[in-house]
Length: 322
Image 1: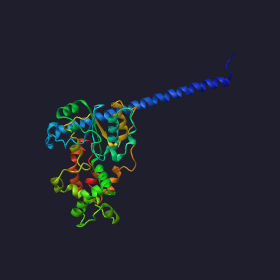
Image 2: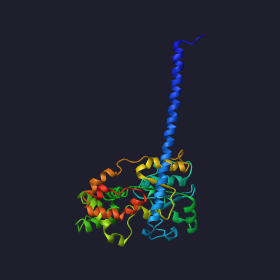
Image 3: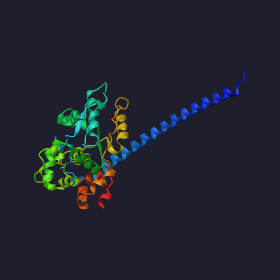
Image 4: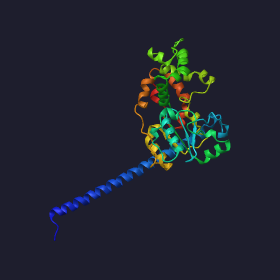
């Protein structure tokens, strides 16, 4: 019995649908492969840039080996011995979410959702094991054999993010320990409010330019090292002394996170939290830096120039040649 015209149309339609599904799957696979290759190439470029820049600027760094670093200088390195992972955290570069991931890894299987861990909890001291808690001989072995990673960010965007988080919002700790002194020294306010609540009620806070003046003042570091939220990234993670296996960027955070979890063979068990909204962006820089004189912008660039060079961020010409 010969097939009717309707049956033939149905058959061809089904075949066409299956071909469409196969082609779509193939295109998705190829797209995924290309994306993985692109991320891999980006990693190679970033690591090669680090090696070359470190080699060219050896004299700029006072320490010549990891053994020269103090426990305080290695204080940003967190370790997960279960999976053989070391993470150097940099404040204002998605470190809350990466600390959540490290805490989940330390707790082992079954892995919980990183977002189930409160942000304040992960920043409590000693919640995550520090590399420096190990004996010196073990530290050396772990740095050699463990998978080491860090995430970096455009240095000027990071500085602005630190200011907005610590001084533009109500933060009693940073107001008492830094804000009041900044208002006295650079804000022409010899008697600032006693508490952050009083200051905000009176609309008194250090301006962004006051904060930049504080960073540029030689006395700031003469008294004590920069607070980690505005300390240079290379001084937190020492990429010329520690050979990192993965260098992530805040600007490509989500896809870099997926790639890193894949390298760690955890992509099917742990999901990196989605980026939060209202992140400080490069586009907002000019609006904030308008209050900063050109010469001070250039001095600020000199202060963070090594971070720009090491991590492949372009010189912000619109800010430095305005």
